[in-house]
Length: 406
Image (cartoon, rainbow, N blue to C red; front, side):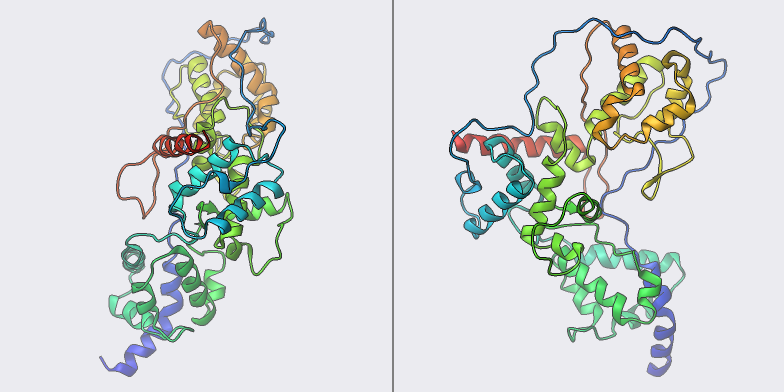
């Protein structure tokens, strides 16, 4: 096959090839499937609405984020570990993020942020991803095969020169960080034929920066709070800076109300999504009342994009099965479940009545938080890891940080 013919084939196939090369998000977990119908399963008979139970003496819950006592404010510089590059810069950006978010600079709050930074990036503003070229090429080859694109066409397309003078193939081979991969993908969008038309919205990089915060979270957070710095580019670009990555990462970790008794549940939420620990405990309570086994993953509804799907999740189906005991209609159950990602869910009729039924059946007070049971999936992960593993590792780093204060 002549070189001229190869170039023509590559030019024609490049847009289709690129569209096929959308890599999957690094963090993903499937929605639970609907439970099978159990033959002969009785429909619960309506009962009286659950009545408020007598107050139960519970162990005191420490407010979180912690509010430090009056006195000089701590700085991140007081607690940073030794051996990191540019200690003053890290301290300045951590302190600024907490101050902008109006989160107290207590040792607990500072150490919570530092523990996640250390776990996610080992104090690198743009952390290196081991084996990134292999991950990218395997994904490209897999998708090319799926769409029936010959390898010779793939190779020819990737030999096209990119804006920095190197071919796309050479840039892939030299990839070390997600920021580099993000820039590469944006160049492919703007430079290759019909790239923007076919690939808009499909950038494979979904997390970034020293806390590996979700870019989607950063975009959502900006709808609630203004960005405290002068923007130098898109939200995506800000996430890859140290100051932006720390600001959005600390917001994801600490800038929401939750009365968890220990920060480990915030660490789990950071990995699985805000309020996942609360929702996982709620799912376990549903299992106790309904008898239906649910995976306590913290996801109460199915979603299509960011909107709830019309198809009921296994959690919603189990709640509908005990709707008579809850004295709620299917519509009311769905309405309350749509608040699952907010603090308001804890104040709904559904939440209150379900816990009354669960504790009445258990004969004791039940915890309102639980470690979500989620298997982490990512091209970067080469072994079996879970949200519980992540939270435990971060908690270990958190305890080490607190020991530095003492």
